[in-house]
Amino acid sequence: MKVIIGIVLVLILTLSLGWGFSGQDERIWSWTLGNRVVLIDAGHGGVDPGAVGKGQVLEKDVTLAVSKRLQALVQQSGAKTIMVREDDRDLGTSQGLLKRKREDLAQRIQLALDNQAEVYLSIHANSFPNAKLTGAQTFYHSDSPEGKLLAQSIQQELNIMTNGNRVIKGTQDIYVLKKAHQAAVTVELGFLSNLAEEQLMATPEYQQKLAVAIYQGLSIYFSKQ
Ligand SMILES: [Zn+2]
Image 1 (cartoon, helix red, strand yellow):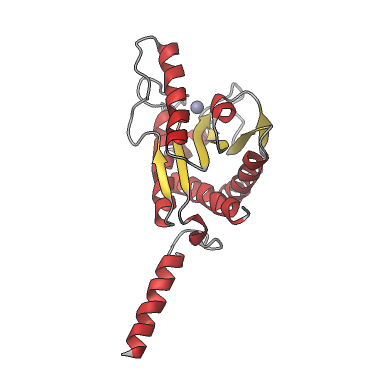
Image 2 (spheres, rainbow, N blue to C red):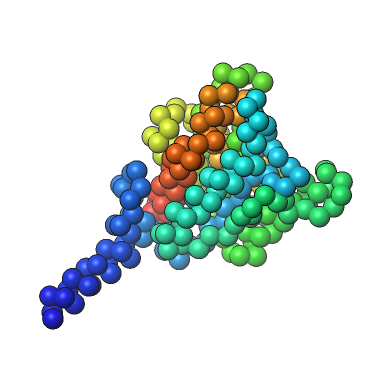
């Protein structure tokens, strides 16, 4: 009987510590995310497709797919996720597109505040006139040391997972990074303006890699808190 209780205890401990996690990289123990509140902002949605690739891949679809995979990983680790959206919609209500976009972004910030999120993860995909550019890149507000630490942690894992070599970038120009009340980053998953990367970002396998990398980076960030 004692042996059985012992085995059950070990099993419970193992599961609660997240050793059962079968990701592609098991260096990080997921227990560091317990009781955390993480807002995941899948960029664009609804009337706003975001960037559109040459192969007609829409930014709003890629950001949603990766965000939902990220949500599953973060939830598995015991943390609470607040999702800006879980389907194809925006949060604005006005008819005029510009006004609607402003409402949408303000609602996203408010959602994070109302739910006392500790981290704001904004997920986007890039587009640039030079079609040669590729790679995931993480942005933070240049006045935010927490944002910088979070960005560094995520970028490091993105580079490992995708064989990338981009570096984080501080900026004053991204609305949600300016307005967020918590440690915030914008992850640009890759370039829709590069045909190969566009096609890659549309595959479930690569979407999962990106989600795992962001999740690992988040775990590292919390472990350093
Ligand atoms: Zn975007």
